[in-house]
Length: 274
Image 1 (cartoon, rainbow, N blue to C red):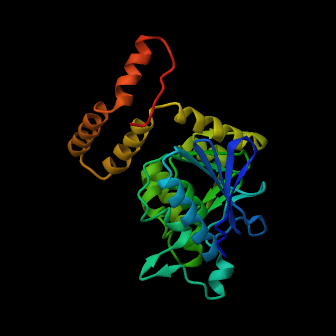
Image 2: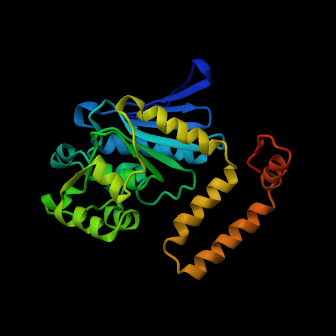
């Protein structure tokens, strides 16, 4: 059940109340926590619907610049789709299109950065959620895998496409075709995550990364992400042409004038997002 109330907390923080997720706004940073600790943050249809509402709010709120995605508790980021609910007949498909994971892994163009703070098991659809994020950090006890072939299915929320784009082909093939798991150190060596962070510091580190991004020009950050995402599927010369178009558009902005001016004046830039 979706609960559409919104309230302000001390310190200017804002929260929207849901049953299966926690969605908070701390200044320009949104934090979405999958809140089904008793199910290792597995995602059923109701959770997917709430995630969709929260992610669309993040996408459309001009004051929000970065999102952090994490799981409640200390054991699991997410173990993916709730197979118990699936076994009971739940179907997260509408009109032939998957509605799983709030549409975040498919069908939701999003050029604002999303950070995955991986605090434990990151498996199946949980791994696919993390792959859809732009930056991934994890705790030392994190475990990663795409076990779907064990159950005679495939990673159908982007795993077969994003994993080979995220890490070397040999590692991607191993994870997808065997369904085996790897630990945090192996994930770091493979380039699946950028940092391993002590368990009690994971959210603080994610916030520091988010705050660093928020200090940069917001239009430039979004354009850079757009160039990365769209350019992945282009020949190099097409990607370079896209980069030129985005740069030309940015150079007409107020922020593009403020950045060099602040550098010349040896002061912190004051970006307006226009």
